Image 1: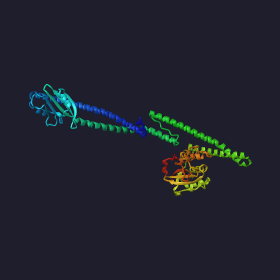
Image 2: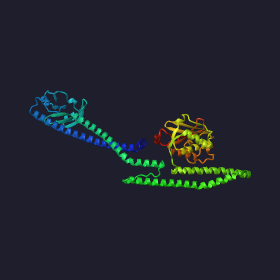
Image 3: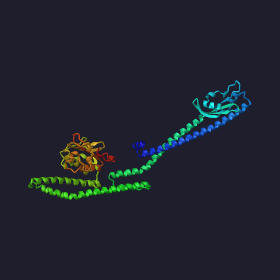
Image 4: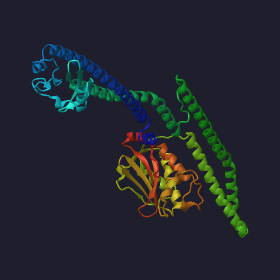
Length: 479
């Protein structure tokens, strides 16, 4: 269980499939190899034992026949017995009263009865035929002892088993290489199959990414496979439901904003008319009119922001990308909207700040950031245009208390407010609009701490000389 959990953590789905194929093949090949090895060993040893028994009994019969006619030259008889290369024979003749030794070993004298297994020697001398495996000088042997009581002899013959061991070593090496090769081939097969199995999942993931990026009309093509067809049908049904819900909410937001626009405009005109005669009103009434005017202004701004976000969500706002002199554009926008007194800086020089962007969107981004600094950050302290690698950055710094690290991502959400601006009069949509416009131009925006101690917002655009940077995608604000 822990191993499976560890695999799921270390490997992806493809890695687990390949590992499972390879491991399954290795286990199967190892099991088959063990059975094959054991069967082959038993067969070869049984065959070898059969040959050894037949040869030992034949030689014992020959010795008995010769000795029954002449017992005078036993040593020569044993030396002439045919034994396998590497083996040897030993003959024990029971004491007949002569002075000749009772054990005779085959010449040349490499082995004697002392090299025989003691248990086998005692068993055969006691009149019982037997066999036993043993080692001599590090080599395996099979000993066969034949008792011939009628002739008063015990015949021993030893057969080398080194050829069997060498054969089994070769078989074992072959089986090990076969198991490893099977695991490798199974892993390659698993890799090939995983590609075909995961290809539909890759298409699902790609479609999900496109939907998340705004392509709500993305759908998967139909599949012939029944299981995949069910997956496609479920995914497309989910996408239909998501698209319908999002479009319904967008229409609702747009309709509400549009319906509010006319009454808010009328309220604004009426309040301005009353506010123009505030000198003729009692103090408490004049104060109430002032509060109403502030809230109507706030409501009007919120409605305008909602309408803009609705258009952005619906993709109704066209993006016209062109090379722009950002420093010159920023100067004109600041002058037109009453921020000409804010210092405009360009550390790298005007010739290095040409960027690809939409003129109208950049103006909206810059104005929103300047108004945000004015309303919530103690006023803007500087606007900086600079080159950063293959990008151009538009930085607006303020004199406020700064933004907590935990809030630097959340403040770009809709209706989100930082701690320092919760008592302000903004709609909570200005920074969300900035983010949407920046993304529409292939860039991004992030909040940071200003070197002067306040907050600064950095909008990233593509440099005019590096249009291929668009493939990098938008930059999300840091968390």
